[in-house]
Length: 225
Image (cartoon, rainbow, N blue to C red; front, top):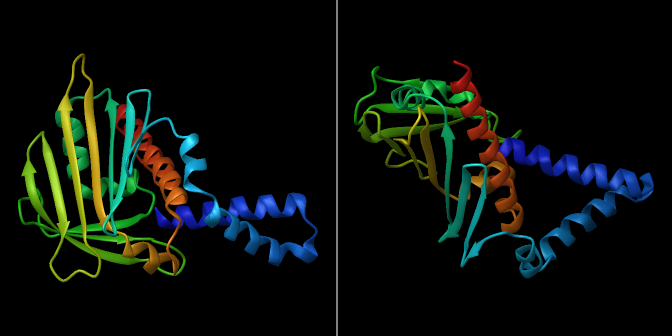
């Protein structure tokens, strides 16, 4: 996720600068663009947002939504999409975390200590956070596993960064399953990966975009199977 974000920021700033300014002013112009982004008033951003509830941003389109909130240095992200696939097939795929690399682009590989997975099973995710952190391991433990319904894992005690990931499936009708993906994590991992904290409006836009990519990729992978 963070690796995509760093590339997104570099690409958009570079394109903007090189189109309108001579090369002799590029260095200072980049600095000006970054500072300007940070200083844009929040109310201007809010005018272009379809939905707003206090500190929570809600986006929706074609049976897809993303909820975002930032509280006490914790980021909460909830998203849902409808998949034309049997509920058990969807659950078996999303609960086998070794499949994550097929729909979450930052995942390099995932190791598990037991299969089938059980409550309290251990999981190690190797993640490309950024160029600075190209192979960062996060160790999780399964805290809830309810077949064909719910899968939840949390980083183990003593982890440098806290995270809880929840995946839930629900049968709707006509062979359609609703998949809901929720992540709650420590915002300090952003500074660890990038070296600095991002302005909130950039973070909201990025998480909206990358989450749509993840869930649409998952939908495509499952419906093509």
